[in-house]
Length: 177
Ligand code: SF4
Image (tube, rainbow, N blue to C red):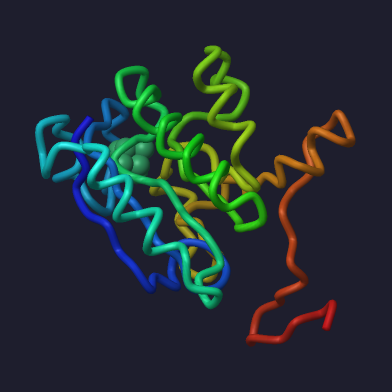
């Protein structure tokens, strides 16, 4: 797998300060995708163990809330092994940090063993393709209304799909605080 970019101190792709890893390669080609350069599997740089070590080190400070994996498409079949490897190592070293991933697939489509392993390391999955006719700039951490922020831990416990909610409401107010 190649990766397109690694952003540290990212506040746009999940709650708190995070390290975000943009992987290369996506065959979904959503209309008006916000970064079509990442569709190419050869875009960017090789995703080596040295890169993984750098990502893990960036998660070490207390003020870093967690890791987000997005793309490109982390769940492209040919990207899944490398993404699983990253998250396996990250979860082992940081059992209590929050891990998110964004995918153009729906969770129901992620049925391979490796996809299931990736899901087992995640706290939240933002799923579904970007759909331009459902675009909504007021949405938090997603671009179109069909996309869902799925709380994977609560979903597993409940046996039914539970959406992520940290109590934040429009206007910057936290309802649960
Ligand atoms: S799944 Fe994501 S990266 Fe792929 S085309 Fe759609 S918006 Fe772009």
